[in-house]
Image 1 (cartoon, rainbow, N blue to C red):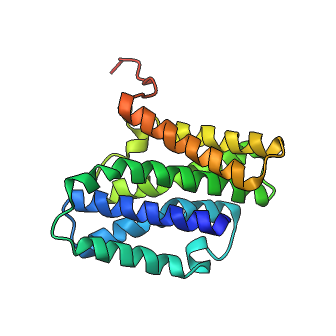
Image 2: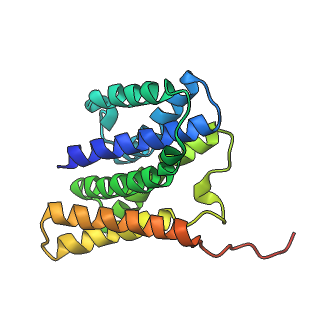
Length: 204
């Protein structure tokens, strides 16, 4: 089940990366690179921190092939339809939910303490986008004060997963509820522009 969810997360991350790269006007190499970074960045960092080898996308060698195919296929379109561009937020939210919950569960399976497992879930869900933003020469959205709730959604979803598992809810149902919770929180935050309060003091 984790592998299936992880594959869905990889595809969502790849689609988000492709749309983001095309919005910046990158060429085919750039599109493929950003798609790979978005799809694999957070999970790779998680695996390195957990000392899991080989990295998940090396262990499942079909993942890079799928991401490459998605990137090339979408790159061949002369233009991305406006309706597809609107799916950028949905792909982003879906990837965040799937990756963060998978990351939390994998960390728990490694015997990591719950709080650390949730943090690793946040890393899994968000740092692929951070890497992609840096490559696209942008301040990562994760760190901008005007960005609607992102890591907060993943953090909350991780705790929902742990709570449900603690209550002996079936793993499949716990995964589904936690993932949907993250996706809905992110979409609501985007719609109503819900952000965290800036810590800036106003002093120069």
